[in-house]
Length: 102
Image (cartoon, rainbow, N blue to C red; front, side, top):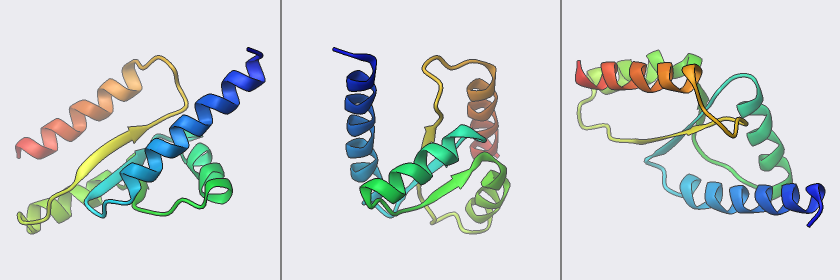
């Protein structure tokens, strides 16, 4: 299998997963800057996806909405272009967990 074939196959699997995630209005995809939004933008153009997508910079607004409206419920999906995750994703997870506990 060539690198291109593997990449194309992987993007196809990712697109199918995003279609399943984004069909549910309670799901919010958090695209990590800078490549996450670009990756999803490409999928939205080529795979006809639509749904709730925000960047991590919009999380304070989401947390405020959760604070003032306790009945609001959502599932967060973090998207980045990285194969391995490290400090950026861990910091985001910590921020989300801290905000939920409040």
